[in-house]
Image 1 (cartoon, helix red, strand yellow):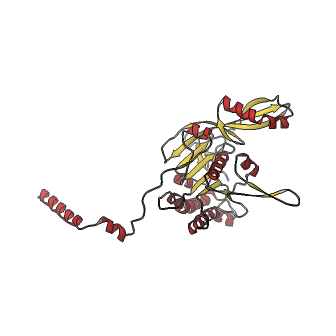
Image 2: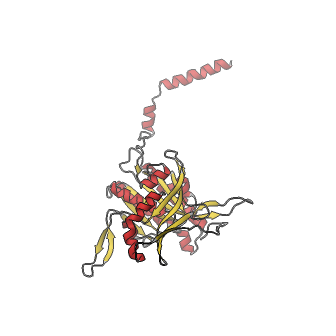
Image 3: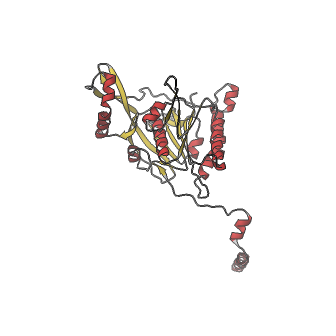
Length: 358
């Protein structure tokens, strides 16, 4: 009997399928939009960055997180991304909420910037060029950051901004949510909730959808994210690296690069010194890929950060960099017969917290 029932079920199923047209069903339900994604492209960063991590650069059309303690190389990677974007006619869109920005540093890194000069005084009064820039003058909250990104994507869709967009946010965790502002209390839980709502449920989806073949533009979001070290939860346990502002962007990011160590910067300063004067011209730091949903590569190594970008952690590259800048350092130090030293810049006393520091 069981065999007979199965045969009857199969017969009914076969009969139903014979009169069914899947393409007609897709059309009726509005399921005929393109399902294909564009071939993956990358923004090439400096050879030192791509060599040490064995990747082509920064993936286009994705959420990318550059995280680590202060002064570990995050902003250098952000600026290298901006410079490479300009060269490919992708519009850099700077969202600067940490307010440690330096146009001189950006120009030193190779960003194409035009100076606006006062005709009477000859003083540089502003900068302009092939980029967009907003900061805390107009961006006050997490909601403002998300609203600005969505507005630019909407303008792009209307035809008012005909560029692929490279959004560059420096940094997550440096601006509170509206509820924190209104209550005059920087509540980390509220801020994390706003990040999840504003980005996880909205902005990040718009970025990802731009990778589809049906989208005329490809947009990317690269964010820097400071970290803090959480105390171990068990005796003899290790501290855990935590992201300021919560983990909403971590979960949505398809590519995460971590600079430095868990509980400290993990850097060493490389300096030129003479007669008590010194020029810090580089930092050596650990770097690794912690998350990679594009090609699966996860690597780690050491890299050297300079005011002009990344160089390889090798005696040859350090010597070449030194030789290229000896003249300018000699002017500061009062002569070219200076000494190169290296100092550990990591915190000796590792500070850990039970909750995110405000």
